[in-house]
Image (cartoon, rainbow, N blue to C red; front, top):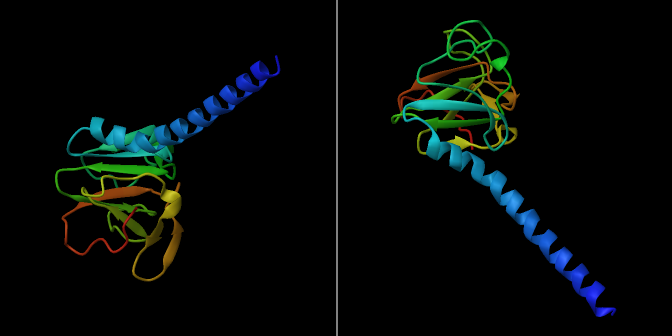
Length: 156
């Protein structure tokens, strides 16, 4: 009789062990899955790490994610925690500032990188000093030509 409860407990623990890795693997797959389903020529921004909770996407530039024009608007600014690039060979430069002077701290994401799943791991850079975490701090973006020296800090 004692063997049955012990066997049930062992089965429950084995089942729990199988669930935890699957959940972790599933979270890691989200950016890859989103990249596969993304439209060619677009960049995407997500509110949470691992490309969860789509904020918006764009095939063009947007110099102010917080204003009322462009592909990103209003509360979109300073919300991105992960980004995705399915552009047509271009790199995307993301800024912590706004305006068409494209100044301030930035990070870049190349088409080859595909996505940065967690911006907590990335810091803005502008050749003068480090400006802090890129997580929840992107306010604008533009497309740049690969190799034109606009990008000196890359998202990972």
